[in-house]
Length: 325
Length: 199
Image (cartoon, rainbow over the protein chains, first blue to last red):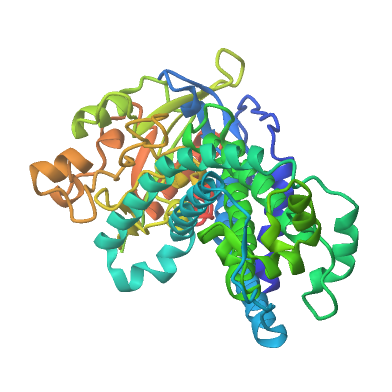
């Protein structure tokens, strides 16, 4: 295991320290020293990058040898592979633990079936636009990392290659509705997601997840705010790195492309982990919350339990009507 | 069994680009793709060197390791070939390759780079090169005709050597000891993780 870790650590160091160490070539003088000549044949220590002049237009071809490509391979095939896997496995296991050890948060449905509008149709459309794009982007992205070991063996080479090619196209094109949706989502919920004092209380009480009373919350509680900021910042990082990968070498050199590729994958895996948590809490974890994103209306008791300050706010605005009092 | 390798004796390379031209012509490589190129180091300075470089057909090749669809294979002779029907043009092999060997028909078209193209050691594709379609994809399969790669056969100064690693390593070692100098077999240690002195 230690032997597997060493190249990763070295790689991390070298990727940081890689920028051009100038190459020195001495003029050759005839020599009779056989040992020295033989030693010179053994060029096992190459500079990180050997660049020269080349007659073809693409000056990237002027890079003669770049042994750090080997390091990218270890970072990509070992480091990134297992970190991606770890993010997702940890997310799934902790949600399973939450479900089986702590259980769902339930609530008492209002006897008269009264509901309150939580998200407008437009808000829900934007949410599901981003969500559906993210699921396809996530699955096609995971396929690039794990498909070769998990899918290819039973799907066969040709079918898997075709699937992966279609997946790559889907990944490239669905990026754009994702970007548009994420931008609107960022704006539409920004003012409800600015941190305030209620969040501190909410975090101290862990949202009432592990028993105890529900801490008060406005439209979004601290946990939901964290999802929002993870989506905005993590999604934003994916957008930036993703666009850089779509226009290879337009923005950066090969070292940059290598780092961006690994970063895109790691951020995406972390985002998938966050979204796994989000899906659990929005469906099984907290009963009654899925309705907010399906019909847009939530049970009034659910709203009073989870978001009392928001309900009071809506009431003050006169949005609830006399039946609710 | 032979282990096919390339070796460029930089002391002999005169930057004539015959290897590049021969390769492009032999395999009818499309415009913009270069399976082989000549790089001049210290251009115009004392100690100027030119090195002809293509896919080195690495031992434990990084391109094969990072390919998401596992389209690479290595023949019994150590030649690294890839299946263009499977390639999705993701570009990872270019990020991993120490020699900048993988080429793409489109470079910045929205991430769609087309099928990767690279030197086949004149061995055609994974299934050889027996049909016009395979010729268009991979070029000629000279090896099965008993011929070595055209770039090395064309080389007027015998700078570029292609063939069994033990044989060309011994030739290079003998040259260096006889003439009393040599700047090393460029890329050899990176590609094959040994040195031409080990014969």
